[in-house]
Length: 97
Image (cartoon, rainbow, N blue to C red; front, side, top):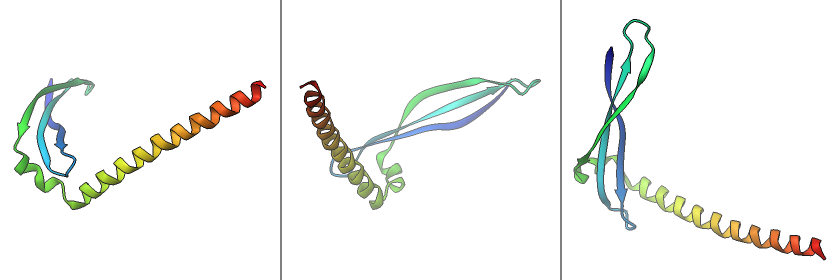
């Protein structure tokens, strides 16, 4: 069996003010049958802590801006969903009369 190690995940946790709160990485092993070449699966390793200073370069100012934009869009979605629920309720009540 052949095994290939690869970076599976890097997770970076942030704070509401755009700072890095923590980070970790997970490496994985892909296992392949030598004869058939069939993929036999992937085994995830444990999460290991990364130094936030080491991953800071992965996140620049544009990330913080995008993160804030995503939060604003999610808030808009919640508000629109609430409005849609109210309209659907009013329509349902109007149709029952």
